[in-house]
Length: 312
Image (cartoon, rainbow, N blue to C red; front, side):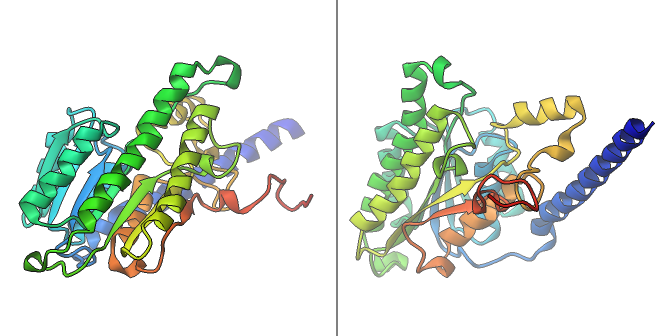
């Protein structure tokens, strides 16, 4: 009997936690719809990679950048299927924002060089490059093929290196005729809390994201005195197309409310919460933030692994 009562109470607590999480996320998702247009990215020319997922950080960021007044968005993804939808969505709501969609591999040097050159030819400037393209796996160490390891390094890390290399060259060019009087820009990389320390991802994924975090630090120093900032965002558990398998499994088991329970907020995150940070880093409001790996994880990385109320 006591077991049954305890089980019922646990289920009740689970349902209440899930209800509260859903309500919070609905409020966050409605913020953009209910807020007036912003000017934080006014006249900025931006490139974003990895925008193809209908429930992804890239898509959410592209829409947020448009909301904040970006002049021209160059949006890239390896999979072209959802690019027309994203372009139509932005142009319908923000007709003043130019949108160019490109099917391309973010780890292809020519593709990245070309899109930077296209922005310079058409707009005469490049202000923001958000290198967001990435993939993951679910391999254990013993089952990780060398080919998988190298593929993740190419897609996740090489793509960020290429973004920094070619975007920084474009960003150094001044063009007073287009309102850019000196070198400068913001390069943003999508890393992960898995790149900060162990426990948040498989070995190949974690290694690739650790490389991304180091790129942000190293390249910020390499680009000193250019006014080009390089920072990485380290998301925690976010519901995206890449994590959909874990979320669907939890829904089938009825344990959705437990997703994200290890962080102090006790919940998972959504792409809009990462897009907000990307927008801040893209804007001049973050003008003194450089070479940083910024965790956006509900507080997960703030603690050593301990039980609530107990210390090591």
